[in-house]
Image 1 (tube, rainbow over the protein chains, first blue to last red):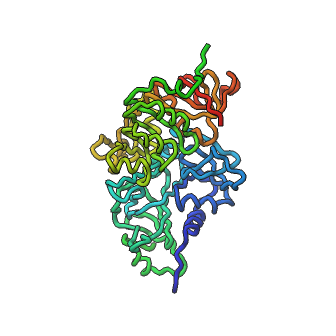
Image 2 (cartoon, chains in turn cyan, brown):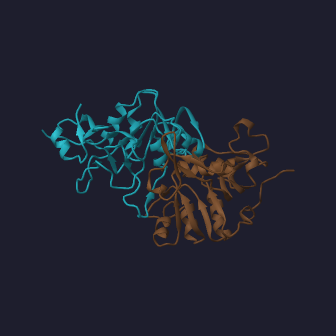
Image 3 (spheres, rainbow over the protein chains, first blue to last red):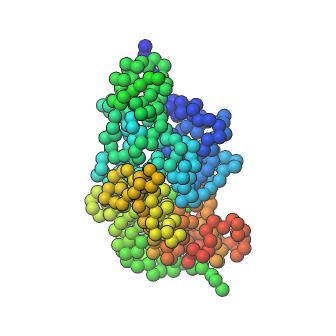
Length: 214
Length: 218
């Protein structure tokens, strides 16, 4: 049977299904930012690392507020009931365990919960740490949204051990890819869900880490 | 009479010394762009700039770096394809990469008189190599020190003559904490208001943390 990998919106929509009403959630840059578009039917409070509590829908061209941006410096709106704090308080929210969930993008995730998402080597001039290390260690749950394999070469990004510099060790709880939903367990990644048409054999062939079914 | 307003950009930037550490606020909005231009015009050399991100090819931080007046940048995020990334690759700019929350807390600590703190952020990454870590309640933590500024460059929406400030929407970001962490805090404000016009409970940055204010209408 053929399978069609989820596109980036599809991954975001799949994550959104698992976020219950009432959670306080930080969304990273990239696929995670799209998650809020699919949570319009529930009251979920979205946090941006630059001090916004209560991100609303994206603005139309006509109602852009130049003083209001998210972590990606994209223009946003506020929900009714939003709050604004300064940067140290915003990261107290992240580091202090106040977020029910953080969703980040990544280059690689390992079966022990390690995440690598800021550099592809120790010495390249791109050093895009930003707020990821604080969010990764501080949120109650860390989920990762990413493609299962590299676009070029097709190598697995779901690893027994990360090959890139780490963002944090042992913090990832779940990974949502274009092929499956994986949960980090002491015995390997437990497969919670697969896209229609995907088989255990086909998923194993695209995954370097240990996969288990419960 | 207390009056912290200065008449010109040159007056706002007067006295900044070679080798100064300058805290520059902003995360997109909230960047004191006029004061950063003034710093380049003032001409102090061998500066250390503390700012969230290294910017791109143009804009306040890229333009300041392009003058060659900056020797070191302390920030959380640098793109390879930017003025900062290229200067670093050529050995023209020293970089200290600090996780964004640690950067904010090191600045807050400076303003609060806290001389060090332990955080789990980055404790098990290459950013902790060769540095002091310790297990606290079963969690590996990294010792971090405050970042004091000789100067802070701050953006505000409103200011009164005591230097009480409001910051608009997400333009608040690093402004209140950087204002507390420097010996000389210089503000550019979009609006000047009478004393008392900002309700005391609506002041975001108290005037006691501010030395100079320049009116820069938007």
